Length: 121
Length: 110
Image: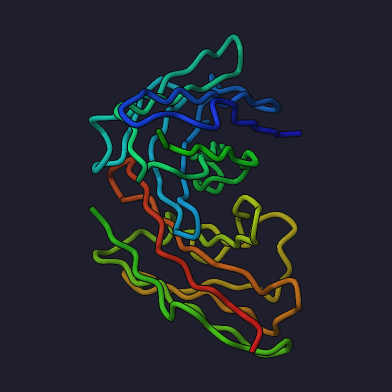
């Protein structure tokens, strides 16, 4: 059974760095074709793809946010971490992590329940 | 960078109606890299269609996807009460690992 769960602070101040952790089970990020992606959704708005890390530890970032994002993994803990620097109220959103199998659907198939992060002083 | 434009923004229909949702890409997308999601309030998105036309696990056959190149369509043949939701298209850019979502189409009860 595949599960993912996001954890991190619910509230951050402007200019702070946000660190989110995705803890997953039911698959291994070391397996060829496996990836974990981060996606966010501001309240009442559309989904926005942020970043992806794959089985080879290759990392990919949204063009518009790449200077502020870092994605990393700890395969021994089955965790993927996303950091977002210089947080702004416009970054207030529900942040999701999701699994991708590039040799299957190629699209995020299992998602965490999401974590709402509010940026406010 | 590919931009996905969905239309209409809102679709007002009744249960039993046929829903046709459009997703247009700013440049050609490989069909194998196009997917559709359903999202209900307070829930994570659910994968409906991948590879433009393949239904994901446990997705009813009233959902179907079609299209190629820059124009893709999600069709719900006969809306059930649980189908009223927001739908997003998604793609991976060919030759790149960048991904993008459309802005969504809300299917609401007329």
